[in-house]
Structures are given as C-alpha cells and as structure tokens.
Amino acid sequence: MEEKIGVLLLNLGGPERLKDVQPFLYNLFADPDIIRLPGLFKLLQRPLAKLISVLRAPKSKEGYAAIGGGSPLRKITGEQANALRMALKAMNVNVSVYVGMRYWYPFTEEAIEQIKLDRIKKLVVLPLYPQFSISTTGSSIRVLQHIFREDVYLSRLPVSAILSWYQRQGYICSMADLIKEELERFEKARRGHDIL
Figure: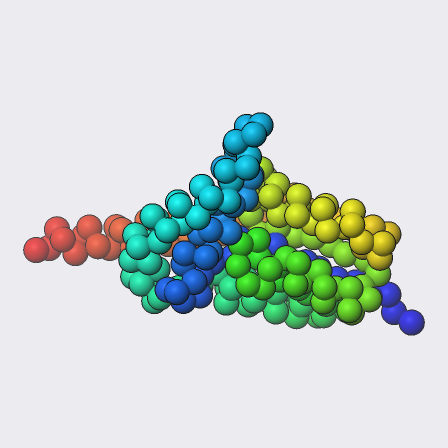
C-alpha cells in the first residue's frame, strides 16, 4: 500500500468579508509573536488585541473594500495548493495538499485535524512566506509545535519543514520577471505622457 504523504501550506489568512475584519485583526494582535509583552503584561495581550482590533477595523475595512471587500489570500492559496497537487501528480507523486491559515479560516488547527483523519504518514510543511520571520513563519511553526507536542499520533509523524526559500533561483527569477513587467508598464505610461 502506498504511503500517504501530505503537504501543508501555511499562510497568514485574511478576512473574506468586511464583517470578518475586526475578528481577523483580533486574532492577529492576540498572537504574542506579533505584539510581545514582557512578564506580567502578557495578561494584557487579549484586552490589548481587542482594543487595537476595534480601533483599526474601520480603516482596515476601507482598504479591504477597495480590493473587493475581502482578502484574496484564501483563494490564491487554494489555487497554489491545487497547482502543487497537479504538478506533483504529473511527477507521479501522490500527495494530499492542505491549507492552514494562521489568523483566519481555514485555521492551521483545522488542516491538522484533516491530516489526522486522512492518516497521513509523512508530512512536508511549507510556509508560504519566502523568508523566515518570527512573526510569520515563526508564529505558524510555533502553533504546529504546540499541536504536535500535545498529540500522540502527530508527535510520531515524520515532518520536514521548509522554513525559508527566498534564495531559491525559481523564486528570484519569478520576482525579477514581475519587476521587469512593471518597469515596462511604467515606461509605456511615461512615454504616453510624453506624447501629451
């Protein structure tokens, strides 16, 4: 029987509707990797997160309204998961790909529950943040470590994590191509203004 391999894509998450903005911000600011409070001040983490999220929600809603009413991150990450599944399938690698968001649905915890239900035997963890930062990859990995420590099945699961990939040639070329496209657009726009 073929071994069940899983790939877990980790990302930040984002509000899908305007009514999700304040609770999403609360989840973000309640994370001690985002706002670090010393000693006894840690008890203020959640009340502070509530205050900041309520105060910032109106301005953040304006930004999300300007891009269609919510974050496209879940959709984009889902598309990446599907593209990865298809690419691996084309190489005759049969995997299940999961998406776990840190601060909004589907939460990392939900992805882990599905991994357990699917009885995955090996897991590759790929945070979708190119470079390591304690407030992005670090926070996502910390949550996984906590979950895995508390669970007998997960504590025995072989896991490989790709913690950063900013130096990978494919990523660098992709970023260079995007920058080149924008520079070409800028140049065309500039020439268009010269004509006027």
